[in-house]
Length: 124
Image (tube, helix red, strand yellow):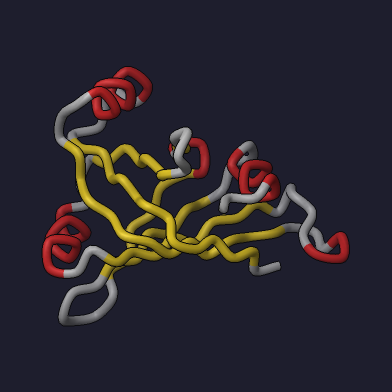
């Protein structure tokens, strides 16, 4: 489901916006492209330090959206830059082998945000 262009974007630094919502306004937090780890079955693992409002929202509604991109990766028709909107479901991991692997890479994390991707659309 995740295209080579998506993986190309992850190789360049950029901001990742993470959108969650429950009953009120959408909530947005940010991280970096270089913090995303893709598993062999194409789940996205993201180190989480704070993200308490995101966690609260996901406990009520596990749907999530991510927006990410890079101006350094050519998009459609050689447009300078491309981005993706990823949709899926998410939960926080607090233990287990994937948590341990992520803790080795990102010592600051307190939890891992695991996103199961349902769609990843290239936008530019």
